[in-house]
Amino acid sequence: MRSFSPHRVSTNIRRRTQRHGLISRLFLVTLLCIFPLGAIAESAAGPEISGEFRLVEHTGRAVDKHSYDGKLRLVFFGFTDCPLICPTTMAEVARAMRLLESSEKQVQPLFITIDPHTDTIERLAEYVPLFHPSITGLTGSDDQIRDAARGFGAVYGKGEGENATIFHSSYLYLMDRDGEFLDLFGYGTDAKTIAAKLREYL
Amino acid sequence: MLSLIICPAWAEVQFSDSYVIRPPNAAVRSAVAVTKISNLNAHGVDLVGVSSPDAEKVEYHLLEHKNGVVSMTAQPVVHIEGNALLELHEGGLHIMLTGLGEAFSEQLSTEITFFFSDGSRLTQTFTLVHGAPRGSQQIDHEHH
Image (cartoon, rainbow over all chains, first blue to last red; front, side):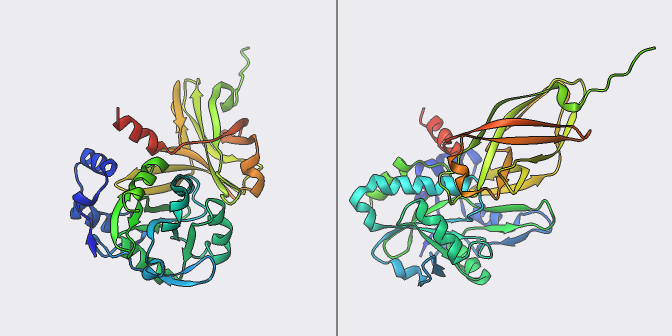
């Protein structure tokens, strides 16, 4: 299990986080706790990224971390009603897959929903294939989603009330062929950069 | 006798650079609309609602993105100071449309109606355009 440390972060993240003044365990610990009063925060247990999960694919198949052994994975936490961050990231992932051409078979993109009540198997089956046929949508129970988020150090949640804040991690995680953490991309990383990083491991 | 002329709030409000970021495919049922709103009144105006015939729900949303976490909060009222320009953009305060039909991503434009606190309203045409991730623009800047 790899921990989240400065040396594992891609250049884009390093520059951005240096500009923000930190990239450390303290940064992830801070994310665990600080959200508005009334927020129903689902937080990671710590900065270690285990990549563990037990979820259900949009095909109905039950899967876990080792169901994709032998393939690199690109993992993103989002929801299908998200208007910008999620579809934009999925579109860049899809472009990156196309840039890999025949090598795309060595990569498994995974879209893990943070809203399992809306993002059912049927909804995910409508959503993910239109970006790229190889993208797999994953859903599950509230506990399974929470555990999966913990496995990636991802955070998500929704406050209470009519104008509640919805929040979620925006990173795209790169995992190796055994599901262990390799690197991550910040929101806005373009397809060429993603594909170039993937090629380093193909 | 002087006659009192009451002008609706929208009379001195101008919209420019208005567009909707086109959803990448028919499965995406939400979209972001952006625009620049110039309030030429001497006094501030309040936008208290927004709607579109193509969306089940339209709201003003504030998006914040910090340290790898994105958060979105609905804003029931948007205030524009007198003689001021307010820019709604995808990386901050913007208009969020949800419950879009499957065919929306193929449309050329949509109508968005803005409701003011004085009861007046103004409808604008927003063109659908392809967008790029805002972050990618930041990354390009870092490489200069």
